[in-house]
Length: 160
Image (tube, rainbow, N blue to C red; front, side, top):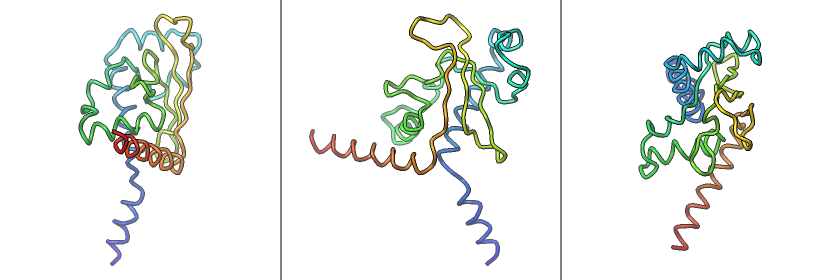
């Protein structure tokens, strides 16, 4: 019986929301490592402190994540994109929150991404802030938001 309790404990700790968020930031990190211009910005920017420059999870949101996700018309793609919208990583329009930003995620002691700060590294337009922040919603907030989204979908289907 002990192995089942251990397995149940491990499974209870796995959070689908955290997995999706981690996958997005892992993708951003890969894009940062492949972009020398972004790396040069981080290394030479006087706006960034040494602690930020040493962040092992630095990422780059170059607007390509959506191309690597399954289509929103599929069950899996709709779930992933819906989650990103619910937690604030995607805007209602489907655009990424951090598009055009170097991203510095904050990770807690258990390796879970809890927040992030983005610094615009290219041209800044009048309507774009130079710095944006994101905070991961609490799990109960995500559940409420996702249930509201399901209600909206059901209501929309019923009215068609």
